[in-house]
Length: 146
Image (cartoon, rainbow, N blue to C red; front, side):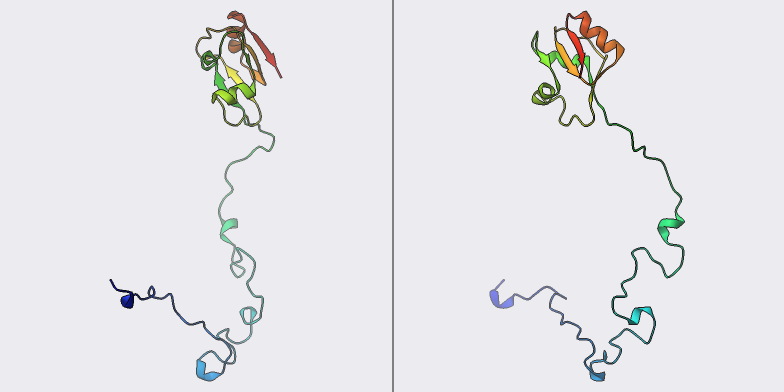
């Protein structure tokens, strides 16, 4: 390939369409907008989703599902995952983040009772399942609700 053989991509160098510059251009008088009507006037972009009075697509399709505005997104962690901490450690949301067990606490953290806990820990999170609380206390630790 030589520099003298370089050409712009096909279609990238089209000239602008100059409207309303006389009959010879093919776009004189009405400038391609036709006669009368909504589309002939300036600012006739129309409303988004408007289909000329026909029932628009977003209203033709049925409504599906329901999203509760009051629901909370709770991050769940099993008791067995807390074995990464040392004995007598205080486990709170910041400690869980630092270890990498959670990245975003969202609306709260809940400890679930899956697995076994082999450490004595003081755990401070938003929620506990009944079995998780029992397992933490059976290991000699505390389960505090914040």
